[in-house]
Image (tube, rainbow, N blue to C red; front, side):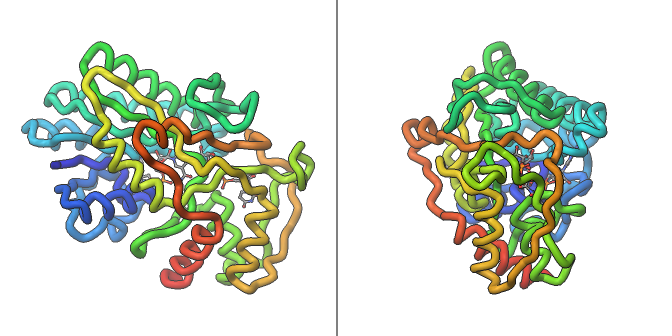
Length: 318
Ligand SMILES: NC(=O)c1ccc[n+]([C@@H]2O[C@H](COP(=O)([O-])OP(=O)(O)OC[C@H]3O[C@@H](n4cnc5c(N)ncnc54)[C@H](O)[C@@H]3O)[C@@H](O)[C@H]2O)c1
Ligand SMILES: O=c1ccn([C@@H]2O[C@H](COP(=O)(O)OP(=O)(O)O[C@H]3O[C@H](CO)[C@@H](O)[C@H](O)[C@H]3O)[C@@H](O)[C@H]2O)c(=O)[nH]1
């Protein structure tokens, strides 16, 4: 297929592009490099540097693309609380421009990066796709709004759309990994300590109602995530919007993640206890039964593999 990948110079997008190229697809990346890196775009894919508003319509105009994978977004929860207008503009506004360009050029298949943040504070664990969506941050609200637009465009404009709700993405693959500046994600921050960038890792809150008092998350390897995108692409069906959670079904606490990083790196990794971070739910764990049942996908790699691969990547890129 001929594919347009928005945000393909970012962490998750670049790993998915490497899988798409390996599977024989022709890939064009559209990315404004606001948080991505031109050198993360895998060999074999073309890069167009522009925003969705300025670049999508011209790229899609000739009607030759078969589908879009839409990763481009601003995705730092805390920043979204400080700058909600920026998040609505960048996430919903830019997505509407992309969907409009798709509609005008007749491209109707799309796989979208949604998020566990659409659920907010869950009523029970594990979270199913049918559970209530009550986001607690502007970031989660913008992503839920985009899911809603896709449902509407599927019904009214014949889009075949799949929203993949990622839980906590981690690990590295094919020499591609996390390079966010500043970094907010736990595993990358913990590994920065043995890499010599900071003497201790901040642990945000140890008084949560969890077994060891720290937040529990469902970590998923970025290569497992990439595999799900290839299945989702084949599952795009005109007139339908499907939503799938992507997680492993089991949770790890922040303390467990830090211990795993100690084990893998052999470094003692000092911890500084800090107050809770605003907007962090205590437990987020996915039920991924729906995508197993319907598309045959399940997470294959465990936390040890994620930390090991992230550590290999960190050392290689230092
Ligand atoms: N990393 C996670 O744990 C996680 C979890 C849930 C959902 N997600 C979603 O997955 C997607 C990818 O996340 P990531 O961690 O790779 O983020 P990232 O910041 O590394 O990648 C996003 C990419 O989009 C580009 N971009 C942003 N706004 C753009 C715009 N308006 N026009 C063109 N390009 C633009 C950036 O330059 C960057 O290359 C995002 O949509 C994010 O919300 C990520
Ligand atoms: O330096 C750090 C970084 C994080 N944490 C904690 O670690 C946990 C995980 O945090 P982080 O890695 O920032 O991920 P989340 O905030 O859970 O968010 C990620 O996972 C969500 C889905 O579960 C997605 O919606 C988001 O886009 C994605 O950033 C949370 O309890 C944080 O408070 C720390 O204690 N210290």
